[in-house]
Length: 314
Image (cartoon, rainbow, N blue to C red; front, side):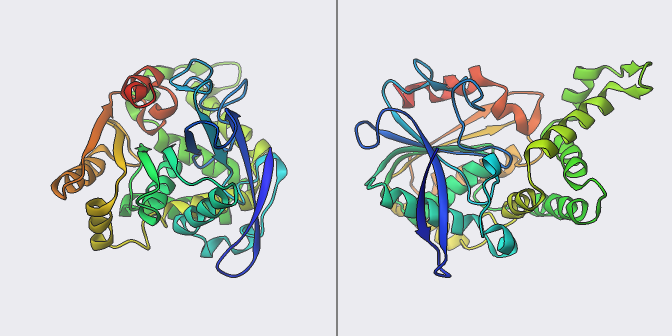
């Protein structure tokens, strides 16, 4: 993992840690991958969270592309902290996008072949495209929106309450979040009402406990507070007229991918954005992942996702 230092609007030095996979920077088309709330820059390789999509001879082929991934400053990856954590309530996805562009400029990258990201990462990709509408060939936001809905803001509010008042804040918040990331159908199919006689617990309870403890072991409380907070700031600094102007003037090819069962960023609101883009003259694509697994389908349904992306990365 490498790092660069940029200066934010408050004239504070911010360290951005990043990883590069495949070809060297500026020796091949560059694909920027933005991670989600609990993700990081480890996008491929043995422990990569998108290793089924990115790598040698995969959909995003590291034999052909330079794949770049930044860590959101303050995400706590590998114990790394950031002074953004102490001021997390003043951070926004818009500011993170600006920091990423600062990093790209320091790396002497002129243009990006593609920016792709799921969930929070996809929303930061939207912010980046709006800030630099002529520097990205393909924008691929997956399971996300360009503006936080009241539903999302409400769930962030509940997460904040758990994080600030629970005896086991990360575990409690993660358990709540896991039910938001999946669907009743997915949960019911997975566990079939099974009861563990030995532990005197339902298997769904064991599953939630596992995810809560697992995240608690690898995530810092302050980092979780920052990442959760960022969700409600998505698009907060972009008006509808700003977005329409972006759509009319950008040279970026927009490829939106939603999930039909997503409870977090609903397919309906993403389709509304697609129609707005189409009505304002931008050539774009819209695809829907069909899955019972809800929001997490962007980490599960690799075959469908690959089919949608294949032509764009050939």
